Image 1 (cartoon, rainbow over the protein chains, first blue to last red):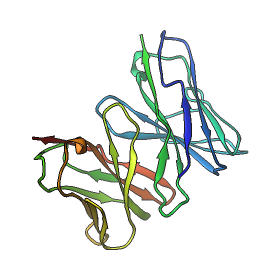
Image 2 (cartoon, rainbow over the protein chains, first blue to last red):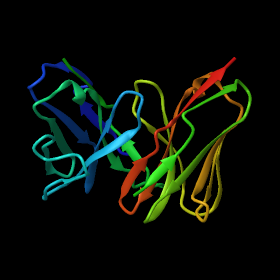
Image 3 (tube, chains in turn purple, brown):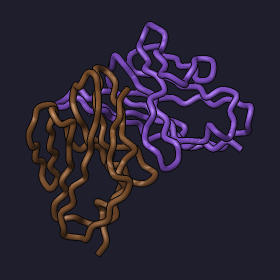
Length: 115
Length: 108
């Protein structure tokens, strides 16, 4: 399975500021996925990041709020912009496992608290 | 739209067997997955079903009925470390979509 290094692991940010989350994969992958997991809830897909093209955002998420970069096949960033307390959540990146199943491997997550 | 439903919480006793059910609706079914998520950690892959029937992997088994839109995860010989949330997820064409998760508490 792929190994994903995600950072920061946690941060406390002031409202109105922005935070960029990074994910580095130890192998080349076509798509990377960004999820949000709010306290006590399941994972919600924010967007799919493809190398060389704009990310595809899910309903309720927009590029101005969550800009994504995908400069190469092993790296992606998600920025949470102009943060408010409602953005407090865990953010996870993931990639598809191309081994003997097609489940997802996740980064360790970024626990964001906006104050 | 796509709905994935599973119980919110379950409690079981160490050494026992527990079955966690999941029902789903999807327009482009391409596999059903179960993940385990311990508190404060990322989800980890447990099992994958794309054809009807039972897949067994050690103490964990997963069952799928595509015609019924139904799956279950069976955990045998429960251990305290099995206390976690169990997420049912469906691959709808290219995207993986998750249920809200079932929080399992294993008691001595």
